[in-house]
Image 1 (tube, rainbow over the protein chains, first blue to last red):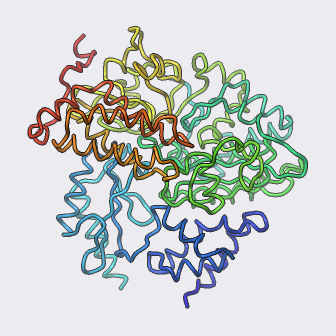
Image 2 (cartoon, each protein chain N blue to C red):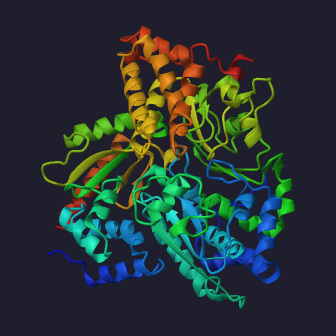
Length: 166
Length: 449
């Protein structure tokens, strides 16, 4: 059985308190974010059922939301997810070349994870950083004005981070 | 240099924090509104200001507020739309990231006007670090007495909450946003009823964009009448533009809507000209949904007048020869860019973001993407161009929400103005893989002159 830490449980209660009585389903998106963070970076059916029980809603209500929004991962992902934007403004500034370079450097295709489980490559649609293109999301933050050199640095940074936190 | 009302202080060191923001005159509009004005007077000022919704549709804000139903004993809500996702648009992010208290201040005044005691900021999930900034500003404002119970002794209570989305462009559409805020898929609702009557949890609700709500602060400070004097015609006040693509100085700029498009692109105060000394080919002036214009029609209207950066002038000529102010997402394409490829990325975007409720949008967006990919990859047929035209026409106006139109318009405008480039791809299936069509007969009027 999975269960939130006490700290996260408190956070869930805090979120539910933002809405009127009986409208706790409104907490679904924020609680799914918390669950994804807490339980390995993706939402298993066990995780989704747990969230349903926390909010007193049916599991199907969680599944339909989890499958609708692009930020919820429905299968295991690497420790570091490179989410590279490929929409118009990024394309005008060379995002295609950046995506190709990451594929070649990490030897994976879009949607794939490196065999060491460290990196997943995803292409995403416009993240609102068009003036700082090309860009990718890495965890909580954006990495902008990407070049091949910058991609190399980011990969090295992730590897160092993984080695330091193992 | 035009007047700046929103982000002129965004560069002041420490403005993100309460102390500096307050020292710079912050929260004066809350004092003025709550101490000297009734909620209806605040709404009247917003009406007088002529402020138009800054999210893209440009609907008069004061009018939207006056539609809000106020039945006894039923809560009303203000929801701030921070789901900024229109390709080319990144102005709200700038405002929230660098001068968050301006939004909080605008939310307090607006909540007071509308009678909302719980106000929600719905922010796109990918802006994952910004909720921390906003929540910090909220707690500072609360500690200083601008939020919470009995604000300034007026008896008015207000809490502001930040809710993150999870990756869905459609949630920028106001009824999809409300669905999402209720913990559901972002499927737009059929209107009517409009949110002003039946919105969040079936209660009367106003949904406004970040920039719109921030603009309420200067409106109350200087008065609606003064605000309306800035700008021209029905384009009152200042507007944030986010400029991107092939320009020297991409970024967020505040304009007072009296400058020309040419000045915006070439002046060092704004975009600083086309990058790498290239020539201007085309531009999408108001976010990916609005029609692309070739350089000649961008800088001058069909009547030969200078095109200005405001609502009326940008739409001069209708969709045949004009475009729209939209969300202010200004995307510039240089002479080497391929319009077919660019349009394909937008078609792919809309296919990815269609919620799937309405079949013209669900099926049509994917179909358009497929055809555009074929043409771009040298596998297109001449008849594909007419087919594309036909598909976009059948999507437009036939869906519950405007995403269908938003997907149709970029394709329509690209064919309308760059048909020869599409035909060239079809006629030269191998060459189009090796090089781009370039400027061809779309001469840059500035160079040609």
